[in-house]
Structures are given as structure tokens and as C-alpha cells.
Length: 284
Image (cartoon, rainbow, N blue to C red):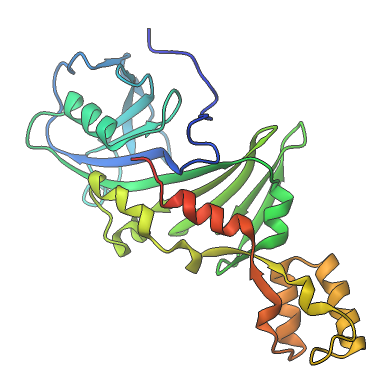
């Protein structure tokens, strides 16, 4: 049976404790085994061809050691010189995806001598005590495209960055008390960071993602009206009003537009330091 208990992909030992890999896509070159080893269970191949499909067939499976699902696509239909012969996608369901699991599944499906490169990875941090709206108000970024979606029960998903860009951030309500902060890093970003082989993904711990997104809040102590040596009363009142109704991104732009050189008014949020700390604890 190709199934197992589904905990919704939320793990108690990673929530507020460590970042983990929710999904990884591997490009494979080499020869497939006619019969995969017993460490995986696979179903019957099925066609996936279509107008936009790159591959013609796929097979789903389960890693016996973890209970996590995977899918292998093969049979290149378009762009044969640019597309790898096979694409293996591993997802977390019972446990976070790990480097050991990636190697185990790849070896179970492929003959010795195959080559494997990472083409996409989703690095995830699950957080409690916050909300999607908090991130929308406090998030600063170099991205220029934003989108907010709401499902039928009112749960929000906030997208930062374009769907086809080198990186994208997705923030959404994974469970009533859990907000998921998830980076999708695609091949161009991974190449630039020198992360191509599966074992190198552990170095994501040290990648400076603050150059992409960061969390800030207004330092209210520096907006006290009449405080000696600080802004004038009228200007302070305006800034205090902006701080209440604008996001920090809008507030920062307002300061620039009005020629107010007070970068010290914005400081990192406590959640910013927490996210970076959990990134450094990435499980892989």
C-alpha cells in the first residue's frame, strides 16, 4: 500500500525549533533500475503528457524508511537538450525530507553511476504566536510583486515574488496555530549560491536571505512628541500616525518621499532574529 498516516506536514520537533526541507526536486542523468530496490514501494506508471508537459510519464512511490511520498517523471517530450532525462520530487509528509532520504530513494531507482543535481528546493519554517497579517505589515523585501489569496474558509496566503522568479516566499496559515514561512529556491538562485548537489543543501543554513526579505518594526521610543533632540512635534505626530496605519514597507517609502533621513526609526523585529536562528538549525 502506497500510503501512510498523514500529519499534515507539520512536525512538533521542528515547529519553532528548526527549519526543514519540505520539498526537493532532483534532476537525474543515468539509467533506471528495471526493478527498484525494496527500500521503496512504487505504483504503476501513468501518462502525464499534455500541451505544457515536459515529461510523458510518471510513477509515484513511498520511501519505506520515512513514509514520505515521491514522484519520478521521465520520457522527455519537449526541449530534449535542455531538460534532464528524469526529475525526482521528494515531499515531506511523515517526516522532513533529508539528504539521507534523497540519496536512499535515488539509489533505489537508479543504477550505479547516475548523476544528480538539485533544481528546486522549498525551505520551510513553521511558527506559532504570529499571523499572516503580521508578516504583511512588517516584511521588507527587494521583490516587486505581491499577491494575497484567501481560501473558502478565510485562510490567507501571502506571496512575495513572481511565480517564475529565481526565488519566491510564501507565507500561509498551515494550521490554526501554525504559520508557515516558506522559501522556494529555483535553479538559478541555487547555482548562484553554489548549491547544486543534494549534500550541499545543508549550506542553506548560512545563506544570507536578509538580502531578499527582512522584518522590521517602528521604534516607538524614537517618536515621542517633544523629546529633546528629536523630531518636531508636528512631524512626530505625522510619523506616529503613519506608523499605526502603514506597513513598514510603506512607512519606509514615506520617509524617503518626504526626505526624512531617519533610518534609525526602523529596527529588526524579534521574529526576524528567530527566523534567522531557526534557519541556522536547518535539518538536512
